[in-house]
Image (cartoon, rainbow, N blue to C red; front, side, top):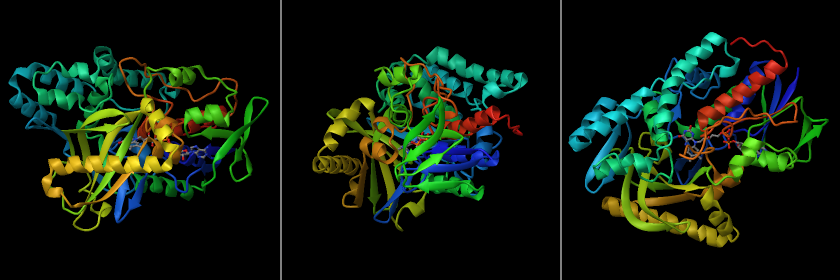
Length: 494
Ligand SMILES: Cc1cc2nc3c(=O)[nH]c(=O)nc-3n(C[C@H](O)[C@H](O)[C@H](O)COP(=O)(O)OP(=O)(O)OC[C@H]3O[C@@H](n4cnc5c(N)ncnc54)[C@H](O)[C@@H]3O)c2cc1C
């Protein structure tokens, strides 16, 4: 039985491990952290459980390949799926817009609000509907499918291609100008980084409105732990708190991994399910060049997203507040730049995340790789870094209290995570929590995971298919094992 060493116990590593076990390999996952999950995680603070990831999980619609994949890896278990009826509420100059899951309702309300925007509203809804049927291949990679299936998939992809051609190069800011009503403009572009393509918004709304983007009850950490259980049931082994330090190569082939506990683990295959830049620079010692990654990591056009996440424990029942909200606020400074809005997610639908009668709110402030130098410099002085975290927490708390005066004195817990937090906990490049964003200047090119000149080694995870995310992590993890099966001439019943 051939053995596979998997570096990283995030969703990609767990998916790779589960499929390795299912297809007859022996596998071990080395995870540097004390728990699995990587960026799909959560943590406990003063009686609250702070979810660190899932806003929505694509693949919750039965009958899709991705749904079957999530079921197979145990991600969905037997938990309820939380199906929210809206994707957010935007408040702007006295107007409130709710992004309903029901597109007829959304169109009707937007047209009532701004009859003069009827044409662009109808066009937006049409564009969303155009890609509702789009399905991510999750059973086998397109390239491994019989020709008939490839055509079927390409047919489905046709609409995505049409949308990309039409709107892929239009930024959200630019797209918002089609609308006359300032609140609609705000809804389209608020808080998004400059140059962020409008298709990101359209694809997200299409997934959500088609019933394929929801939340497994219990949140992110619980989902990752279910996948770990599934992996272990299949005979896989997770070694926590041990990092890979070097991939050992003999005659152009990956043969072992040197680990932080001083051990060296031999492998027939090595799968790196962790940050691509760290793998190339550190684990492979910069000895292997990769044109696609080198270009993207060096180019100013390729932006990686990160954020500051501020969790608030509120001593109040907020079930009558919006689920997700965004509103303009008194300006405040983050990483040297002025922010003038607050957006939050209200976890009232997860009563177990807060003590009785209390609610967890999480606000997010977008950051990118370009903000990272600010954070890493600040982190050189831990005292200053912690002070800044505290200041940011208080600034946002004040804005929440200004917007909701009734909450004054009720926000008793404030927990701040920064791009440094994401980097420290997962080794992610500049605190990135997905891979390269869809912007008007970039091409969304997938990577095969193979590094030229290196045999029996595969990269997998969110870096292979921009913009990343949980579905990409899970599918690339599986597909990597299918590629190894092909290499080993193992017949897989698909
Ligand atoms: C705040 C936030 C919100 C998000 N919201 C969503 C969402 O709503 N929907 C969605 O689809 N996605 C979302 N994402 C993105 C999603 O979480 C990631 O794209 C996905 O989890 C990446 O999985 P991965 O396995 O590829 O990488 P990671 O999660 O980064 O896993 C890599 C693992 O490798 C480990 N590791 C790194 N180096 C080593 C080493 N040398 N040795 C051993 N182990 C190592 C790390 O500790 C980590 O556990 C969000 C992420 C964040 C942070």
